Amino acid sequence: MIQKKSIETILAILHKHKNRYLQEVYKTNLALYENNVSRIEQLANKLARKLKENLPTGWMPYAIEAIIAKEQGDMEEFQNEAKNSIEHARGIQKFSLVYSFEHMERKIK
Image 1 (cartoon, rainbow, N blue to C red):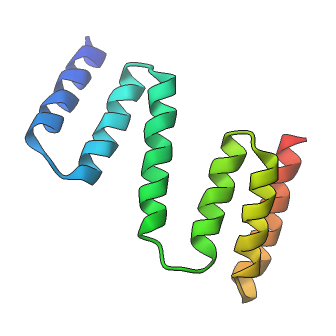
Image 2 (tube, rainbow, N blue to C red):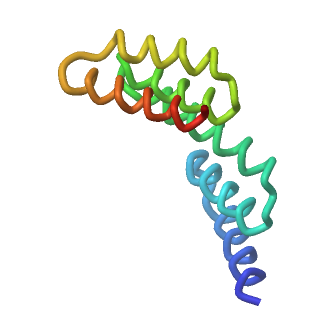
């Protein structure tokens, strides 16, 4: 019953609010409530790419692409994007990225 009410509420929000970003967020929430895994993945990737477009240039867009590639199981692309991200970072951020990507890669093996 609560799930049905939640879905109805999300549908009402989608009908009322036309902001593209809010639409994507609530469509993702709706897919979660409907347990639509393929739709969740599709919308989450779309949101991540939109977020990436609004990030400053530098290491961030590469890091987002690396994470997406890892989630999709494309380890070659993950390694390429991780390398690009590290190359564009400096200082403590570079240090953090190196160890974060190494940790992510170890979790796969």
